[in-house]
Image (cartoon, rainbow, N blue to C red; front, side, top):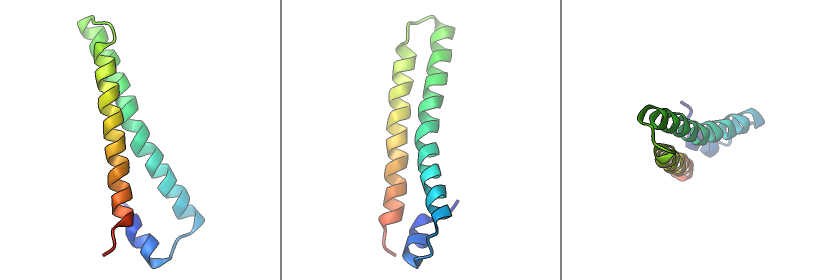
Length: 80
């Protein structure tokens, strides 16, 4: 995995690296939410509840997405 904090400090930033960083942010925010929806729908169908697990896992996925975003932003802004 690329350490974006080192790249920004070295001033070796090209447009492709920005695109890679933006893509990484998007994927790290999208995947937990999509997985939460899939797991929630599966559990609701399996147990026979009406969207309770879906709501729970969407909330968990969203919180995980923001946690990922926070950690990536923290890694970028740290000065070593």
